[in-house]
Structure formats: C-alpha cells, structure tokens
Length: 223
Image (cartoon, rainbow, N blue to C red; front, side, top):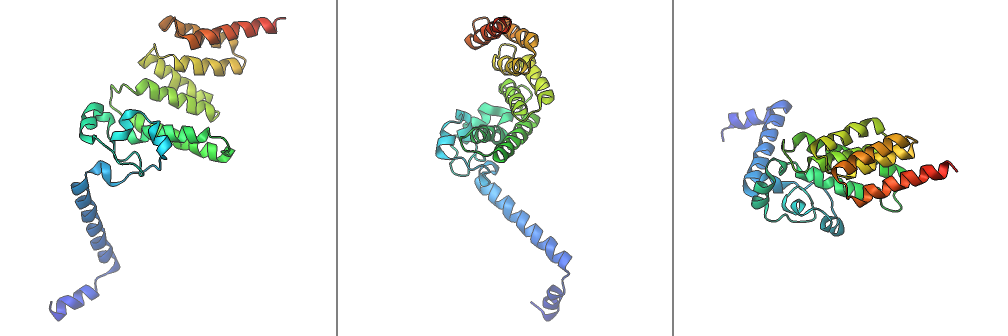
C-alpha cells in the first residue's frame, strides 16, 4: 500500500467509515443467511421445555420459534404450511404469552405486558398469514379472547364475528363472547349467541351446558 492510499484511509470521514462498516455487516449477515437459511439464523422466543412440548406440532419445525430448541423437518413443513410458514413463529409465541399471563403468582403488570405481547404477535400473524389459512378462525377467536382479558370488549366483538364468518361451526367464540355478555348483564344477547352456535353445532356439550346455566340463573333470579 502506498503512503498516499494509507493517508487517504486515515483521512476517511466518520460518515464514510459508517457506510463501509454497515456494508460489511450486511454482507456478513447475508453470508450467514446463505449458509444457515433465513429461518434458522435468529430464534426469537425463550420457550421452556414444558412450553415447547405443549405447542402444536407445526411449531416444532420453524427455526424462529424457540431459541432453546432446534427445528426439525423444516423443508417438509414449509410446504405443508405454505404462506403461514414464515410468520408462524409469531402465532406459536401467543401460546407462550397466554400461558405465562395465566400463571399463578404473575403480577397484574406482568400479566398486562404478556397480554400486550400476545395481542401484538396475533395481529402480526393475521396480517401475514395465507389468505386461506386453516388457522384463521382460531386466530380471530384468540384475538377476541385477548381483547376481553384486556378489558376491550369493543375490539373483541368484531374479532369473534370474523371467526363466525370464517367457520360458523367453531363453537369457542360463541361460548367466550356469550359468557362475557352474560357476566355483564346482557342475558338475552348471551342466549342468542349460544343459540346461534347450537344451530351449527347442535350437540356441543359446552354450549348446551352454558345455555342451561343461563336459563337456570334466570329462574333463580326471579324467585
């Protein structure tokens, strides 16, 4: 290297140095991605062994789900999950946040924080899942549940309605929303919600049991 070129490098401006370093960092990241595959470079959630074991099977096959566990059969499940594959780790994380929010001994502030993370990850997945995702009704149901736990019934109602539109035979959103309606004194609306659910799943024991509870409760209140 000549003295001139050496002096030129010494006189390089901070801005130029930053650009050079940034380019080097980007090149290094792209190299890692090419070697390891983009879904296995950064795992983002600290699942425990017990939490990981409770996840749906597909969560075990995407590299970004757990920083403590190695994904398997990724190529096969990329095909199986289709467009859901890339963002699926956000949906898998919702199971973790919800489980932790309900743990004994969790403070109110910690619970609120975890519910906020569950909401964010649910909405992230909703915006990026495939247009015909088989998980859509389940995800909207969970979103409605999260909103109710956060004290946001106005946001919860359209989430449950969207779940009904996608899969009218899914009984969980009927039950969760009806329980809220009943608890807040909207007995007729709760009965209507359960009755609608029973039109699509007439033998569902959970819905039938809650309808009986509503009717029994009303009889008791009239005594």
